[in-house]
Image 1: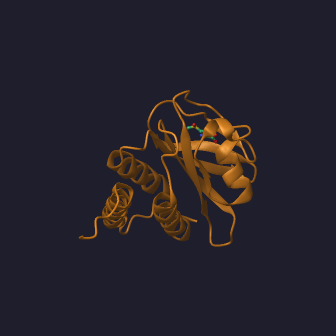
Image 2 (image 1 turned 120 degrees about the vertical axis):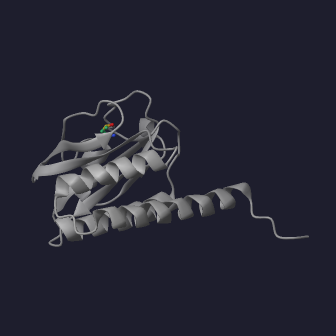
Amino acid sequence: MPFMPSASAAHLDTLDAQYRDVLRNLEAILEGETDWVAAMATAAGELHNAFDHYDWTGFYRAVTGDMLVIGPYQGGHGCLRIAFGRGVCGTAAADRSTQLVPDVDLFPGHIACSSSTRSEIVVPVLRLDGTVLAVLDVDSNRADAFGETDRRHLAALCADLGRRFG
Ligand code: SME
């Protein structure tokens, strides 16, 4: 019997290929760009429009060592300020680590900017000295929308942004 990949394995291969396409394209668009706001706006737009499971996509900037302020984003209203340590974004900033949240209702202190958000992933953008420049926040209206493929590609993107704009 021929090998038939399972639906979910095929889905992950497709998702992986989509990320490689989108990130390759983004790299080409941002080649030579030195403006951080232009880079955030372009990254948010390219990602948001490429993936069906993205319902809010944007950056929160670490304007001080303990406060995030909203940056360029796509989607509905986003909260303007989030203190380090608060919600998923604030936890990613305080811990300087990616937060992958399959069910926002189970995350203590989750900030519900939109009642339709069911799951999210937040990836810190770190400067070369390890301090937080920003976080990339992606929210989905589907439960358990993000997995290791999303984490791996978004981490690579944010590492690159941190190196270039930190
Ligand atoms: N999901 C975030 C809040 C930001 S908005 O939903 C855009 C959080 O809990 O940190």
